[in-house]
Image (cartoon, one colour):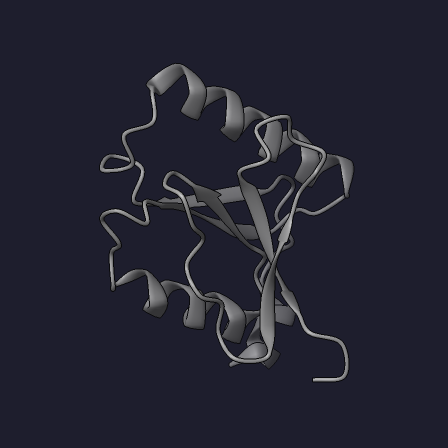
Length: 117
């Protein structure tokens, strides 16, 4: 399947698929601000593909999000998590959530591969 990706035209800008946004409890203005920041960050990194943003509420976790993460990891897409509750979700084995200190909320993380795995 990945070999077919070479035949697809390259996107000219990043796209962000969002999961759990409506049940996150985050205000629309804050959501808009974070999405704009993430989009600008992806552009700044010269990334022009699909990425995934999970709005994770540790008080009301959504088990279906794990499928999204696994699919994104398979395709090599970046995965981000916005912590709406007190904790982040457990990362898949061999990965960790790296806090993106660049964002002032200190609540956004990127899924990263552990060194040596």
